[in-house]
Amino acid sequence: MVNLKSLLILLFFSTAVTAQYTDVINSNRPGKAVSAYALGSNVLQFEFGGLYENQNHSENNTDSNVIGADLAIRYGLYFETLEVVYEGTYINQDITFNNFDINETRTDFRQNRLGLKFLVFDPFKNEKANKPNLYSWRANNKFQFKNLLPAVSIYGGVNFNLGDNPFYPEDELLSYRAMIATQSKLTPKSVLITNFAYNRITTDFPELNYSISFSHAFRNPKWSMFIEHQGFNSDRYSDLLFRTGIAHLFSPDFQVDINFGGSIKTTPTRYFASAGLSYRFDMHKDRLIPERKKDPENRIKKGSMKRKKKKKDF
Image (cartoon, rainbow, N blue to C red; front, side):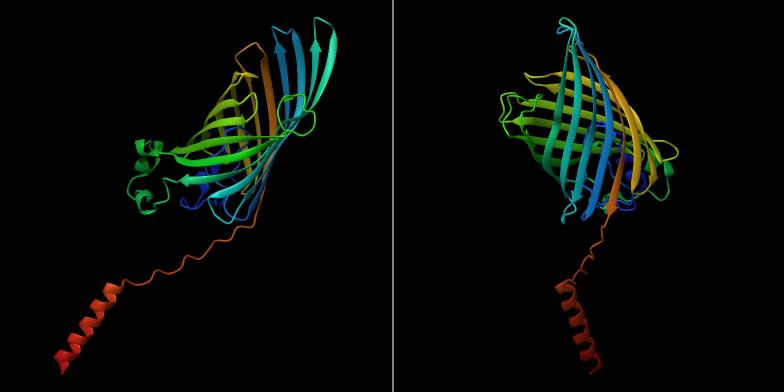
């Protein structure tokens, strides 16, 4: 992610901090970093965007233009902490080899994977420990070191390399991805998200990558912004990317966004922009919490008191 987390808006509006489900859509757009929290049970969400990118490679003396689309389909399973997600990016890349005056077109999936994300630790699960201070607005809105303690989720997924993919010609049909995602609510309006992933496991070109994303809601919490940094390291491709953008919440279930960014290297130099939307079908229903049984010891004590009272009356 470093994404323009509507999640941040989500945290601002949400009425319950202990459940995965929130009253406002939780989108991973417009950044690439993934939040630690799941959608909540029985929530279906679509996140779609169009993209444009320009690449210039100084060593190969090539220029290329990329157009494409991103799609993520997420669904919250029965457990509030578990979601299944499909992520796909399909692009068309036109490359000009300036030394030879040759043009080439490459079209296929740059990303095509299916995975599961599971929340293993939530620092806000204990309601009593996270009750607001009713006597101090400042105490509830200032930065506190305890807020650095993040929610943590784990992810496992499969990459699909269908057919003769020009972007991954040596890869097998299936490869694997593992990730740890963390999320810290620094203040009621600020969220920090990090992802650490090991991708394309079992191929000849495994990839390590990370994302660091900071999001902040404005005074009007329907608007938010983000800044993000991504790093990639593999024998096939290594890079450092930066992006920023904004998102606007039109309704609790609908968000639009825009972002842009680039790289700091020249092999290749990359400049990109994307605009998109997120929409959810909210079929979530709260589950009733069964009433706790009374302590047997208390029942014994009450019974003893009754017996003593009868004996005294007699």
